[in-house]
Amino acid sequence: MEQKKITMEERVETAIRNTQDLYLSDSLPWVVGYSGGKDSTATLQLIWKAISALPVENRTKPIHVISTDTLVENPVVAIWVTNSLETMQKAANEQQMPIIPHRLTPKLEDRFWVNLIGRGYPAPRPLFRWCTSRLKINASNTFITELANNQGEAILVLGSRKAESSARDKVLAKYENSTRELLSRNADANLDRVWVYTPVSTWTSADVWEYLIENENPWNYDNIELFHIYRGATPDAECPLVVDKSTPSCGDSRFGCFVCTMVSEDKSMQAMIQNDEDRQWMMPLLKFRNEYLKTEGDRHLREFTKMDGSLQLQFLGIKSAGRAIPSARPGKLISEKLVRRLSTTSTEEDGYPLPNRKVLILETRVIDEGGKKHETTYKIEKIATLVHGPYTQEYRETMLGELLRAQETIRNNLPKSVPDFSIITLEELEEIRRIWVIQKREFEDSAPEIYLSVTGTNYPSPELDETTPFRPDDIRLLRDVCREIALESPQSGSQNSKQLLFNVLREQLGIQHGYRGAIRRVGLHGELENVLEMRSFDNEDQALDFALLRKAAGNELMYEMRDAADVFTYIPDEQPAQELDV
Image: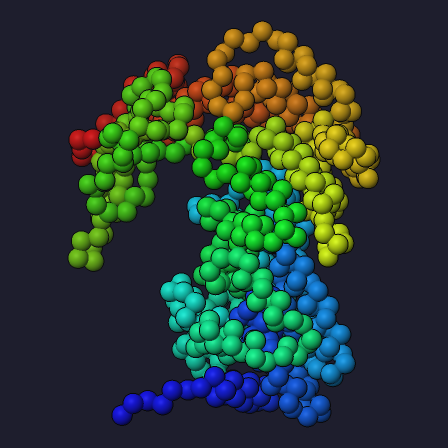
């Protein structure tokens, strides 16, 4: 017998009835995730319609509407959402609705420009996706967790739909082992006291649009204008409320952060600019993102040390004709020990990062055979290189200047519909400046000078709260002296020998100043010595060889090494290994 097709009207009636029953069933507060996109708008509109149909005396439970603004959202959507929240608050008061809008933002230390330009984090990429937690998850989870802790539990209402994508299907599947008829437990262990309700999970995209177009927005916002925003961009999607890393990021959606590097290009902003002359003012944002937020080929823009100044080795598989050779070694890799260096210069073919060295490695793997695990060690040739860390000072300063320049250009070309716009706030500028001077000991204090050169006006906050040990002119003099020193070492890596020398001297001056006024200077000598040992390199080649020497010394050598050659020719004979052809 053919199953009767459910009409859209029946879908809406069922969703409203379920929502009312759930709302009246207990005293748990609600949190509605609102991104301003079509799915979250339809979900909130359903919630509003359902609760408004109840008698005023029954509208006792608060419904918190949270929208997380990363401060680097697509500007059109960010403005749309901000105005919507303001209109929503007014309408809720007038209609005696228990709806409370909240615009959440990341903590200052979590914000995008503070981490990218201040700390020098490389643009986010699949293996270093540092943005999602800081910009999205932390703000929303903190709000939801505090509410749940205060009330015992809470209900999180999401606009996720199964029909959106296979990725979201997998996320929603986690919520289907329901212990209540309409609710499911949150898949995130950090939100274990939060139930999830997805009233439009079975709707299609067409269902959502039909509902929005044919039903008036209850907080007096224009759904037709929302439709026009979508029509001006690429195929249908939106940025969901992100509460865990399994939720699809804004990079998979239409309306996300304009700085997102989890996708190759921002097609939505491109389409908006192309299709609407009134939105061409966003072009500097698109240009900055494409020119300065690179995730490939950026090694020359980054220091060859990690954030804490340490060196980290990476061992790459041998390639053939530019392609990686598939590993014939079974099991899970658990350790790599350096046996010897096989080359003293870099291998420049096959696209290996430079500089590099060919090395012989003892590779230990755990093999599972019929439930029994055992370790096997292989002797294998690999290519050693250094993992590059944060952006260099020079590149961070360049990015700050270009970002401020983009902001100035935008402000001079804003349409009347956008009264004001900022890419980066003064609060963020001050935090970047503080990180540069206090944490990174870049005593030149270049942020005010960059600001003046770009805007033509003096930096609004001339003095740092903390007392800096040196005047910017003193440090510039030190830099000039280092530049005049005759150093003949060839450059390899992002900085030449004179810049590296300057960095070491400036770091030691900062350490020395940190102990000024201390009654006992315990630790001063060790810190100064550590800088000399770990950072006194003429170029990256020297740093790589030094890192290999330390790695080889980790093989528990029982005699004093006279020079690097001793280490690289020593082969521990107490470790049996299988020889493999490479």
